[in-house]
Image (cartoon, rainbow, N blue to C red; front, side, top):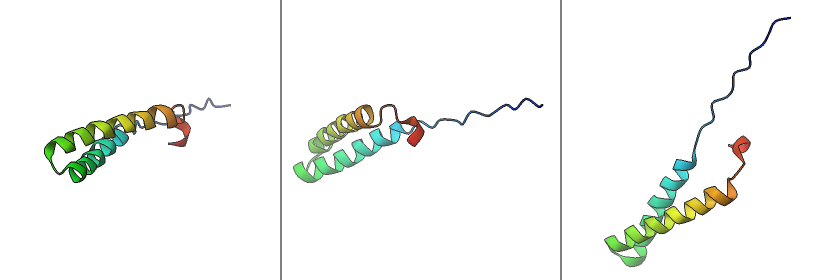
Length: 66
């Protein structure tokens, strides 16, 4: 009987996409709400926080689904 070596699938880390989307759309929302650069910065920070909560709470331990 031959020994079969199964290749381990390379796991893609897509968490950075969630952070990027949170920052971009948070910044867009902030600039539309405040109509200024400071609103964009604050919105991007809030978007990053929400992305962190999403990744940490909802995607924690679900590597097989991605």
